[in-house]
Length: 95
Image (cartoon, rainbow, N blue to C red; front, side, top):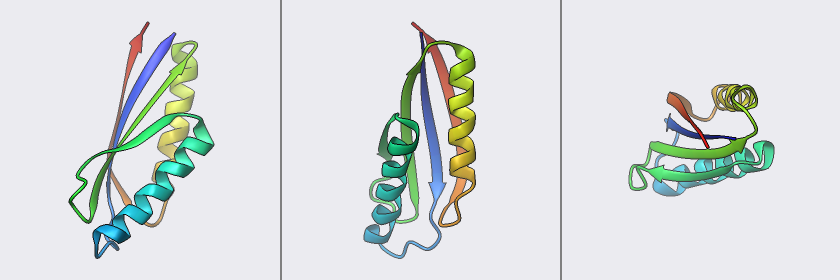
């Protein structure tokens, strides 16, 4: 079994307040969980209005399946228009 941990740093240029930012981030986290069946949280930059770090964790049966899920998540995040992806990293751990 392979456990993957991902961190996605996003910039939200349209957020003029924390309320605007949280609206975007909550929607994004909800869509990520529903679309990919992964665990997802806002991990850092809670008090910054235009920056967010989103953490994603999932388990898969092998490295090939983990790569497919990671690539799907990358495509999903990079295709959005209401924020910019600054960095995406994933690490795999074999259990």
